[in-house]
Length: 348
Image (cartoon, rainbow, N blue to C red; front, side, top):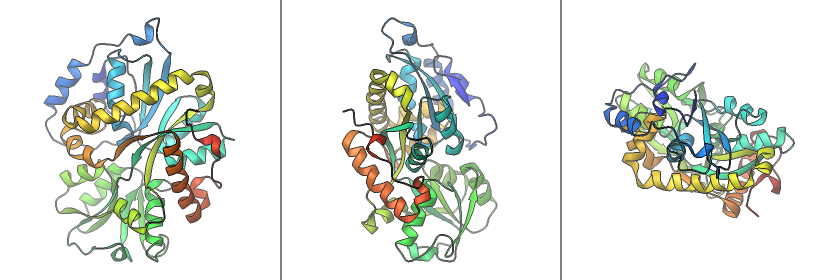
């Protein structure tokens, strides 16, 4: 799905081409009202003080939820630049768009940002940690899972092979003496919606999902209960730093030509996340307007999405610890090598 933020935001209610959607049957009256109030095209990109424009990429989930206030502000013309927003369901679809110039800034799994850096001779830079841990293990049917050790021998239905979900679970299992390749059976799906479709038709299932899709699944599937919070399990090991899900990454040629614009964008994103966390009900309407998930689901999920904006030296330190953990687990998970100092934008 691609939409011009300066255009009518009601376009966000159209189906994302080629991608499955989580069809939740809650009323969308309040969201439609919000859309109607926000359909006047912005003019900031046309005035003399405009810093330019950003082609912005996000993923259908928490990474884009954190952007919705910024997108709404851009639509209203209250930012110093215009925004062209592109959303995909899979990070391996969005990542090439950053390198080839289809987007200038993209929200991606942090390990994928490292892979892009290594595979492109350092052509991308990390701007911000945007999402911390959001992964959960759920069980449908009789609850037999009380601890990580209880996952041994189970088949786990999940989405996120080669990204944060796989490597986070692998690290947690290894901390309990297990191997993701031999002690559990991973049933990887291409999207969170495919995971949902699978468990709807399975009597007993063990599932790994991120928020907000945990909330979506529990709304759609009876007797589906959260049994493990993988952020807590990661922290309990005490050796991996913070569990980081996603960050914001910029192509270096865009950064070099638009430093003032990028600095302004980071400040606006920080404000967006703060507003969303403090105004959940209003934010949930914008989430629906941007075709991410329905507003009632978003309202329940946002408090568990761990939306943050961590920048500068704090971002660098936390990300270095996280990538070192993944590197020690599997060097390929970060692109074969840890990125150097130039990977991190500290504003210095």
